[in-house]
Amino acid sequence: MSDTRKVKLRNILAYGSGDFYGGGSFLIISTLFMVFLTNVAKIPPQYAGLIVMIGKAWDAISDPLIGILSDRSKSRRGRRHVFFFYGIIPVAISYYLLWMTVHFDSLALRIAYYTLAYSLFSTVFTFMMVPYNALISEMSTEYKTRTRLSGAKMAFSQFSALIAGTVPSYIVNNMYKDNPEAGFKLVGLVFGLIYMIPWIIVYFGTFEQPGINKERKTLPIKENFKQLKSLLENKTFRIHIAMYLLAYVAMDILSASFIYYTTYYIGRPEKFYFYLGIFLLSQLCALAFYMHIANIIGKGKTYRIGAIIVVAVMLAFFFVLTPQTPNYVIYILCIVMGVGFSAIISMPWAMLPESCDVEILCHGRDRSGAVAGMFTLIRKLIQAVVLWLFGLSLAAFGFDGSLTFQSDTAVMAIRVAFTFVPLILMIGGIIMSFKYKVTPSTFKVATDEISRMKDGGLKRDISDENREIVEELTGHPYLD
Image (cartoon, rainbow, N blue to C red; front, side, top):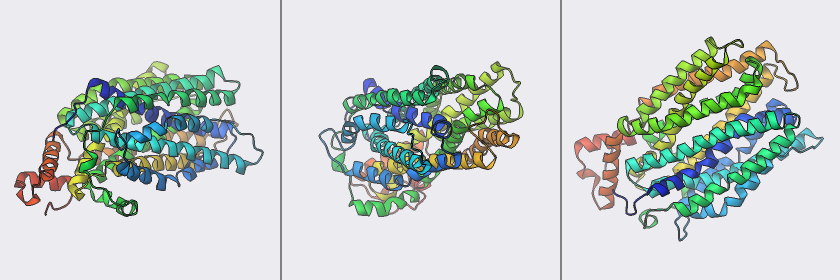
């Protein structure tokens, strides 16, 4: 297949800008929301984690629903763009409400407020990001162009993460050190407004290939819900999801525990935003290299390189780093850690269009919105579970947010969460990466077969060599 309308550099940059919201908003939540709830909103850690978990119950419906609706919607600019237009203002409002401090005397009322606020943010996030993630499949059908789009997406995401990992922490811990409530409120206001801007750029700067809606079959919404489970019949998607979950659970637990690790183990809370900033900057700097080699060796192998680096640096963080370790050593470890994480968090998103294409081979129809919805749902559910379990663990090991110094057991729990949990997860990621079979060459076979079938070809006419490749990707016999 070839693109009818060529994707230009300005379109690539416009598309990538959308993940300024996706990458930054979630990182601020991962690094600071638990601290905000436990230390400012005065909610015990076991309930703080539960707030996120409860808020995700609605996502089990909203994420696939938005995915299905975006597959079925119509507008003069395409089926995805209508979501970007109507979601601009809710992006700012939902983020601001998340960081307001409410002063209810009742703990139950405070929990209820932040549960509702988080649910609102999560719904708006779904409304924007599910169509956005599906859009890449409709801007281009070419492997290298999609990789460039994914690269731009991750570049904006990681640049946003760099800002999100340093500026909010500086505002709260330095500018508003004596009034963190005002600091968090300012973060919500400023970043809520900033996160509106990219969606204007995405709306006007991207497009969907002409006539693409006419080529694709849709099913009734009820039938689509019934068939969501059939996505897991796609072998490539199953492996892809596993690699994605392992990478992002590792990232989420590291992000959630990082501020606790620097504050209560190495005793340098004032250095947190420096450490996190160096980590995120090295992620961003390594991205171009990974995107380049992914086009040569494939995304599965590129993911594996990053996972091996993460395993090595996590061992160093646990066995080498102590409260007496010089700062320059910690900086070096943060740089290496960022280089490793750059691959494992960028490759799963770069793989998403490939899972959508293999889904066409599996079931004969395009469900890129449903695939993206399932992807977003699983991402948010996993983050909720991670934060909930992290909060439970802190409470179980005696963490008390009102204390300057924590017990030895609480500190050890923080160390294990920061180092050994990501390490174990990345060992799993390495194992799964060997099973991922989409490469530049097998991708070409898949897209050529999709094009042949659209032109009226029969499955029985495929060559034996190409049939073997298609069956390896789908996990099913390729028969009429």
